[in-house]
Length: 190
Image (cartoon, rainbow, N blue to C red; front, top):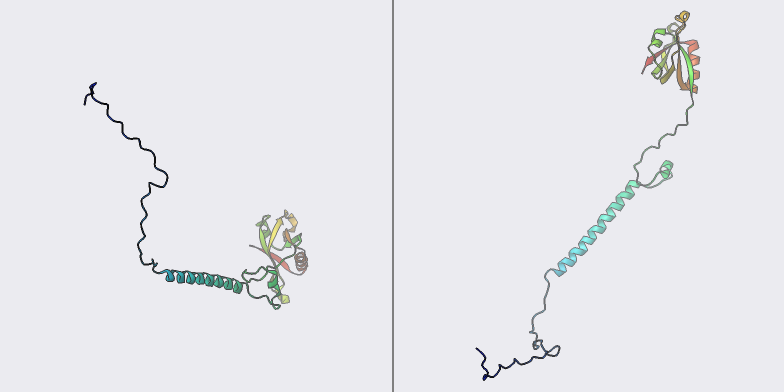
């Protein structure tokens, strides 16, 4: 509507003041009475928890018992077991070999042609063949010994065999030298 000079001005809306705190909440009402809430299976869940704990403890005891059985008792009858750690399988202790001092031994082999087949680094078995008329047989003196050198044979020594240098333990070197005085020596390649 258009304003005319004779019409009064529209009235201003009433001014609203804010209400004090807490007065804008709804009125209180009484809480209705109802039966208590009961959770179904509560006792069952407690029993299941206890049963699972018992199973966990039983499993732990079983593992511990198995470890103790595997370790076995330590007895005076088995002194080597006292040195090993518990829980390891029972095995015989490894034999400790002292350091064997190797020496080079020149050995005369009766067959010169066989010696020509040998090269340094080859592994051979040394066989002693005693005279069959004296009741002797063949026996192995050394197994898997290493050839270190094969010297050039002399022209006139073809009948007496050929020399080969072997790397053997000291005690075996003495046996080889002793056998070469009484028997004919031969080698076989390993």
